[in-house]
Length: 474
Image (cartoon, rainbow, N blue to C red):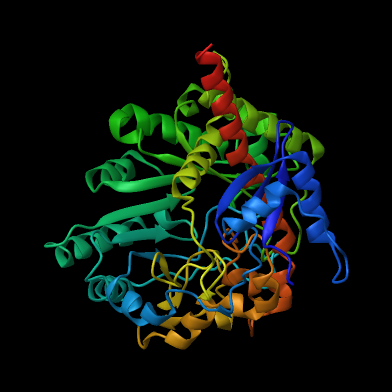
């Protein structure tokens, strides 16, 4: 008999198991917890004494040994429809040129030999028009398609942006549409910000912390000087000139865990302009890098304590708790996870791990030459990541292969307790000329660690919520 597909979890307050088939977290006694651990550790000939509690769970359909039989993404059958009629967004690579040379950038010659490097190549207006036409033709069933501006640094092509917006507004005159830009913030002149506001362009600015941290990594290409003061001044002027609109501007923060977390967080303490700004934090992505991201003990401890304070504040367990905006997004994601964690009967016979999105449907990345990639986070130099171009349209078979990377590691995925919550996508299997299951498996342990902590966060919120209710009812 196969072992139950579960993950054991414990906190200082209680013991639990996550039932993968049922998609539920359940509390168990200490005795049952030990018995379940024995079941997971048992060899074929071992005899396990089951507690009455475990027998009760089994009678209600929990602790099943059911596994998915066929690893196939549920969207496989409708891939052609999704890519022909339901594109959500195109992200246009306006230029491969950048006025920064960030130390961790994947386009750095020193940091990454596999990815393309910075170059002077840019997108022509003719290519941009064809990309807009392509979005028009392939988003018929999309309520409000989005056009994103990306680089390099997209504001180096500000005049091209204006041409594209004028053309897209005319093309989409009868249909709602939106714009977005990701910028390093160094070129946010009054003319630029006036234009972004006028056309309601969703704006995200890259900023990695206070001056002493940001300037270590994000330097101007021309002179090697740090860019923090320039960006801060531009944001302050943006707020002064367009105070209401500037409230919607967000920060993309790439955190280097070799710095202390408390030092990164000082951005929101030392600078009033950043205290209420929305932040999308992420760690340095080393998927395509020559160097692995290294965590210091100090960063890990301080980050965990900041998480704790955020939950304390959310549950109103203490007043005047200092909260870092870095964790607003993580808490929102956790709460969303709680709401979306719907119980089920069993895993279906045919499905796939949770990671892959439909390649190109949510965020089709079109480079300066008109080539298609699933998003801007994959390797533009990789043949397997190229899923088409403006001349030929989508290469459906390539897109289908990226969608179904779970099949590369089918046996491992079937037995994995993190199956439904897996975040691995095609870039984790990208071996340039092929998709590699062995390469993909090297990321599995880190994913399991992240999923484990996410489940523990859900449990802790439950525990604290119950404690808070008990105290209020006393």
